Image 1 (cartoon, rainbow over the protein chains, first blue to last red):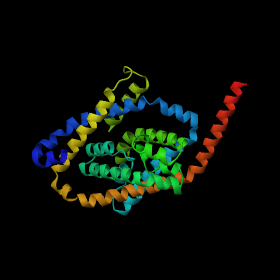
Image 2: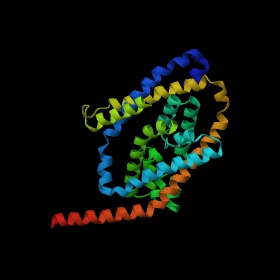
Image 3: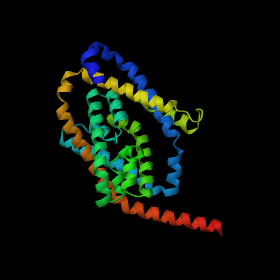
Image 4: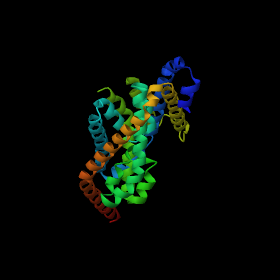
Length: 188
Length: 105
């Protein structure tokens, strides 16, 4: 809808004036994301019950996502700050896309959006196979931040109760990291 | 960038210390409408950029490669620590069971 508006309806000069409005909208949006994350005390309770080793899962997923994007990005001639910021979307395509479009460029925002949509789609296809042939905890990795919502039912069906709880913790922690890491990495 | 991170930190403090009334659905609506608004604006900016639209095919290939790279390394690193985490989960379960048994006695 937005692309159609930009292509046919909105005059090109007017698009430039949207900047202040979108910055304000992004701040309000992140205030909302922050409130949502701050209210999630269930994550800490579950983490406490399962032991702190569980925190290694989101840390490895975050590190792997960023390293993977940087390696592929370097092979394609992309600057490290751009590829790492795209990788730090961890599958949360809407937020990483709009953040990069706002603070860096619309082109990179679009790339982050498509990359993270593709990541979520690949996760849906890969999770059952990884759970069966590689390892149940490894099946949490492809979903990234989506393991607390959209990919959680599939993880739960493909693995066990413990892994489903780890997946929820993983998604919550990665979701909290996206709004912090994306702007930090793009400024590298 | 400072403003963006500060907004999230302020939000986290509000949420963590329950500074809003209980059962508040406003935040979820703010996040949803904020995302929709910003995605429409991003779409408008993309639609107005004819060169970028012409380059969408190349962008799709680049996006698929980046996504595959991120997934591959995530699985690799999690697989490396999977055994260590599993042992921790088992030990923790045994410890919780012993604690419960101790409380009963």
